[in-house]
Each structure stands twice: as structure tokens, then as C-alpha cells.
Amino acid sequence: MLSARAAVCLTFFCNGLAFSNLVPRYPEIVERLAITKAAFGQAVMAGSIGALVAGLAASALITRWTSARVASAGMALAGLAYLGAGTAENWLVLAVCLALGGGLDAIIDVAQNAHGLRVERRWGSSIITSFHAAWSLGAVCGALMGQWMAASGVPIAWHLSGVVLILAALSLAALRWMIPGPDSDDRSDAAVEPSASPTAAPTAPAPGGPARLAPPARASRLAVIAMIVVLGAMCAAAMFPEDVSANWSPLLLVELRPPAGMVGMGLVTMQATMIVGRLIGDRIIDALGGRRVIAAGGALVVLGMGTGIVAGTIGGILVGMVLAGAGCAVAVPVAFAAADGIPGLAPGAGLTIVSWLARVIMMVAPPVVGMLADAHGTWVALGYGILGGVIMIASWPMLHDSRPGRGRQAAWQCPRAA
Image (tube, rainbow, N blue to C red; front, top):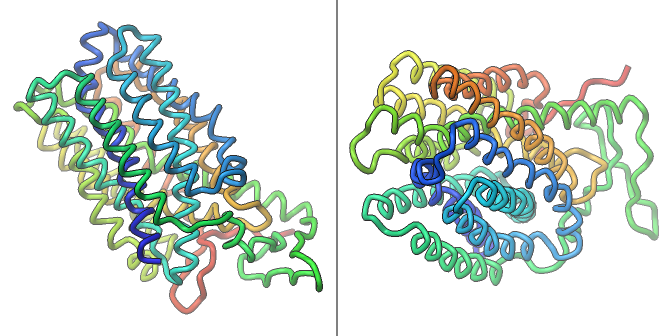
């Protein structure tokens, strides 16, 4: 299992590396295309639209080709989409390429998390946040690489072409180490009856045949739907600060006239903090429980983004990114682990639905932030991050406060049936 765990870490690393190489080039792209912040936000929204269109296919693709193959092949293709975005000569091409990148990212996201959770089940203890730490490490390396390339005057086409080659080599190498066979091989416990209580015993399989899912009661169905909605909102809210650091902090820092090579530091500081948070995240979750981690994390996000607004300086913004990164470091892994544990859903289905719903929410944000930034200033993006922290705080009552000794349960709490 050690080689399979390393392979998943490598896939997450590639995913972070891919998009973050483009981030330090955003101001250059905006200037070259002579577009407004609202237009830039609309192009970013195209990525969310692509994710919505393609994301729902993830579960079917995983069933057909396995999560290992989908994650690896998709990663090699995603680099080509980001290359197209970086070299776009007009807004339409930029939007189309970001849409392709978003669609591929949505599929990769579900596949790599599904395979990571498959490895975790065989590993026997929580390791999911370590995979997301690898993603953050890739994001930091990619942003630093992109900054260095931009500062050195390397043409963006040459820069991103090199990234495509790196992604193809690493993702295809990772495929050799992943767990072979269909994902259903590790989901023998998936056929359980949805219940009002997360601790309810699984429905026993019928003798002499495969396990079957008993039709859920109406109240249980409503509880599952409610859990999907809450997890989707919480997952999106945890992405708000990351969206600020990736898409808006470069534009915000440029306005403050930073020293050379500082444009991408918002992403670097946040993701560097998230690396640490995700490396120790599993132990924190086991010690404190999902509820406390999400509630305290939301408070840190609010504090961090608020610090950036109040300070209004490069240093204040970067300190704010550190605090917000600590707050949202493990929120997405917690949401994905809970989604994968929703009873009665096919392998990858919970991840697919929650990820898709989060992307629906994320689709609305960029154009709204862009329009407000044109009207009131780019600092509005930090207020968008604060909103994410508030939603995280509001979500914690629905989480199951799992601890060591209570078993490896899904980290969620459905409302009791009436």
C-alpha cells in the first residue's frame, strides 16, 4: 500500500502543479487581452461551467475505467487546457480553455479523491488529508515555478509547454503504482441502508448473493439530501479563500506595486500553510473531531481575510492568507470523506454529487466578485473569503464529531427521522 499511497500523492501533486503555474501569469494575460476584472471573472466562471458540464460524468467514468486511469489520463490532458488558456489571443479562447480545464479538473478531483479513499480503506487509518497536503505542495511549487518563469522573461508558451510534459510524465508514472481493478472491489461495505443515525448497523447481505440496498424511508432520503446540500455548501465555502488566493490575490497585489516576484505570493503563503495543516490534519481531526475543526477553521478564515482588509498592505494580505489557509486546510478533505461515506450511494457518487454542487456555487462567485471589484476595488475579493468562513462556521452542527474509539465512521450527522 505504500506505493499506492505515493502514487495518489503524486497525482494530487500534479493537480496542484498544473493550474498554479498559470496563476502568476494572470496579470500578464489580463493586460495582454486588455480585459476588465469583470471580464476576467467571467472567464474564470467558464471554468466552473466546464466543471458542471463534465463533473457529473466522473462517477460513470470511474465505473467504466477505474479512478486510477481517469485521474492519470485526465491530468495529462489538463495541462494542454492550461497551455491554451495561457496563450489565448482573445477572451473567448481564454474562456473556452478555462472551461476545458475546469471540466477536466472536476473529473480528476473526484477520481483522485476516490482512489485516495480506496487506499485509505486498505491502509486502516485516516490519511486523506496527507493527499491534499501533496496538492498544496504542488500548488506552491507551481506558483514559485510560474513566478520564476515570468520574472525571467520566459515566454508563456514555452513555460506551459514544459509543464504539459512534466504532468504527462509524472501522472503516467503514478498510474503504474495505483491499486488495479475496479473501485467496487473496495466498497463491499457500500450497500448499507440509509438511516436516521450514522451509527446504525449495515444491512446484512442476502445469503448466496451480492449485498442489496433496501429502499430508504422518505425521512431518510430527505436526511441524505440535506446532508448533500450542507456538504456541498461547506465544500464550496472552504474553496472561497483558495479562490481568493489563486485568482484574485495576484490582481490585488499588483495594485499595491509589490517587489519583483511577489505577484503569486498570496497563493504561495496560503498553500504553504495548508501543506502543514494537511500533514497534521488527520491527527487534529482525530483529536478534536470534525465539528470543532470546521467551526474553528471558519473563524480563522474570517480572521485572516478580515486582517487583509483592515491592514490594506502587502504584509497584511499575506498574513491574512496564512491565517485563512490554516482555517480551510482540512475542510475540503473532511467534506469529501463525509460525502464518500453517505450510505446507499454507488462508488464515487457521493463525491461526484457534492463536488458538483460545490462547483455550482463556485460558478456564481467569480463574475459577481469581478463586477464588485470594478465598482468598489479588488479588496472586495477578501470579503468573499470572509463569507466562506461564515458558511463554514454555520455548517458544523451537521457534522459527526468522530473520535478515536468510535470507529472509522463517516464524518457526518444526519438529522433524526421524525
